[in-house]
Length: 291
Length: 310
Image 1 (tube, each protein chain N blue to C red):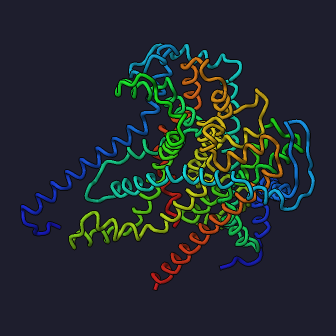
Image 2: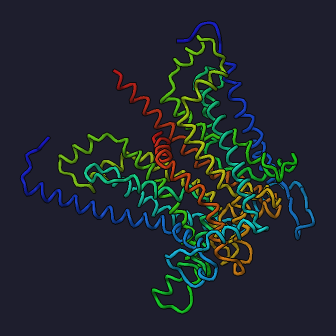
Image 3: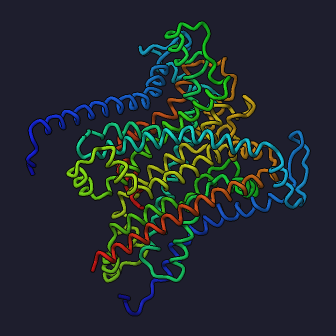
């Protein structure tokens, strides 16, 4: 493909590209620093005693990491470890229910031919974007009448109906679930439910993994609804504890402990993200090419 | 190609039942109940004496529209949203076009991972982190003082526009990576031969960007705009934590959902109901736009596919 370009033209062209590449890398690196710097400051201040933090910022870490951590987990107002456990339980179960039932629903609409199939699909697409906050009032009242305030059930079970996860699963099935497999399983005498659990689910593994991560993260980060439902100290999730720290008399606090508390709620997810990042980023791109 | 005897239709209903039951119980009943509540007077006086519930018709709505608060909080929400969104769409487009540029051949993996990371971080914790970083004795102020030699720290949260700016900065950092990746996927879907032939015709990068990339990713751009408007409408965690409820500075950073949260918290259910219904209508209109957009693009895709088979 060597087009006969004269030597001078080719050279100035490649120089131009080199300049553009340098500009690009400089700008991108600046934004990478902008994105990372808040976390760098967080991690450094997590390692320092309060007094050092008040004195001013320096990039040199201190030796107070363990002590700050102990202060945080021993704080009986925050109950950080307990909240961490609550957040883990709620997010884990939410991710499981949401992905399993979304896959099941998407499978039904993908594979079976029934009268309400089209209307159901259209309906789910229509409700996909409705914000949860618009029904929060009725939701809280209903849960109170069920006696489920301060329970995890209202934070977990509604995940069975997750329109966005459903949509992703449906897209994935369209591209990678041939209907012949289902037919073959039927000929082999496999029941419909068993076919789904032992044959279809393994095929959907990549899509389930991506959606499980997204659902876990959004449940982990959820603040609005849990704050309206949970008032028992022992039932709090991490975002509620963060809000409590924010609203308390800030000046009296041990700043090292405040940074540590933020770190405890951020760092587990950040580590999981960094481990799975390639996978996650492919997942977002997959979701994007629906247009 | 229907198989003869056995009908599997019943399995369609069995497998979709959990989804629709959960939706009915946890979304639809609450939504209807929210709407129903919006027609009642129902609140607590001084946190103790219950008034109502009494049927008042549309009074909650007329009260909501008569007061200055609603317009103000809608405007606040829009300002906070746009302050974050405008730079977000600008830089995302720029980065997406760089990342996909065939001539530049940039190494993009690490940048994508870093740019997206703030998106998975708890918004409440991001708000708290930035509040701490920009606070009176925080690291930003210590850097600011050592550079300018100022004697007293700058009180970022005592000024309307620095507070709004910090909230929008957090929103920007949380979302520009996500938008960049979405736009990249859209640009990668463009037929590369278009770029090659443009290059042979002597088009420069600016020209290919405006004449090829932008027109071809327009559906995704519209999609990004509307989803981010719906997301912006729900803005809560970040401003709530940064401003500790939003009452400071004449409530200049209070968003619509923060206002709703206040009513829910103080059990002012009539007003909360009316506000929820308004929010539902606005979100509904925006969702309809997306729905139509999706349908149109699927329709054209199908048409194209059919045309291609001939």
